Image 1 (cartoon, rainbow over the protein chains, first blue to last red):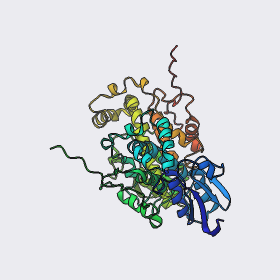
Image 2 (cartoon, rainbow over the protein chains, first blue to last red; image 1 turned 90 degrees about the vertical axis):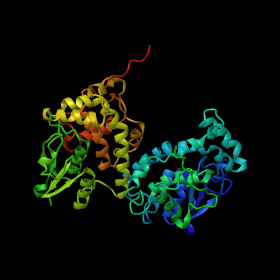
Image 3 (spheres, chains in turn brown, blue; image 1 turned 90 degrees about the horizontal axis):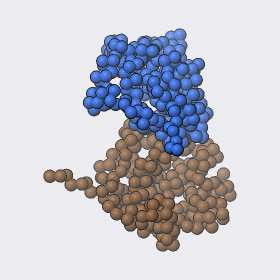
Image 4 (tube, rainbow over the protein chains, first blue to last red; image 1 turned 45 degrees about the horizontal axis):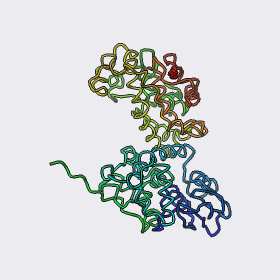
Length: 243
Length: 243
């Protein structure tokens, strides 16, 4: 049992102190959903292995009374299995499988296009000590040799990109969890939290149909998603109609 | 309570007597999952309003002891709400929302491409009395003025089309329901049941990674998916490798 009802979480932060990683964001929500206080270990993109004493190269990592767990999917399962008497993140195994499918779909259809629109903001907002790593690794792994500046250029033509199927899923229910949010909400919400942490130009129109769900998500757990480092998600100017 | 443990189901059949509609297929599985016998009312594409006494233009329709229900999503909810003491189709509201999302994705990425590959078989295998309707309605609604013959031509170049995300979803679990099948399995399986009812050329290679899950699905409930009118789903010849 977590001492003092608190679980340690290794974070991935920008210079503002705002979490950027969608995988860390969902675990922050998951820990609050289970009723825990979060003992944050602040950190950026580099030095993860060092601060986790060699346990992991990636975050999230949690430490629960000396028990270390890595990988957001494994952490969510660990929390439900270890604390079944607290609100469940998953209603059952089928939701776990389907949530992972929707999450994969979200990475391909939401995060990936936005990544190419916000990669320079992402770089510029990272901690100064992380910027050389962010530039080198992103240009090599994801940008096929283009620079982050070349990749982000012209993004106004490529926004917004919220796909209709996601809107349809929330048309008849307040949450993906049904009457209350669960891990499916936190996973999909993490795309918007990630984007808000880096978006120096808003990605969404004011009248985005998902706005109500997104705003309610940011408000959860005393405004967990309302970090001062977050940018506006709404306010993208509407294109002029041809006369 | 269903008399004699039996529920009436209005079917949508081809000339072979095999069900074609993916929405009827999933309700056949749902009724068996709930432990009911099925009292089938055979019918084709036309005359649905007449045989349902004006209740519906579409199937599936069920009649449970005089209580009529239409629309496969509503029927599944009705069965779980009315018979909660029998095996549940859904483990909870979140799975219901996520299943519908995956189903919408499946229609766009699996059924639609296959529809254009099998539309002439679909027409030719329908009941003789339905063929004029099938041709006229499909050409007008879905084929943009092309004939069914023009649409199907060249299909060998367009097969197969099982998308990787569906395979990934089943990589670590025997069923989408987890340890046992549930309504998520029946929804996605219905794409393959539909295809098998019309595919005079198999859509899938013998070594399709989903084959094990599909075969186990066809075997469920004493081989519910093994109707004599079903065609082989596997056996698509591999393209010759360039020498």
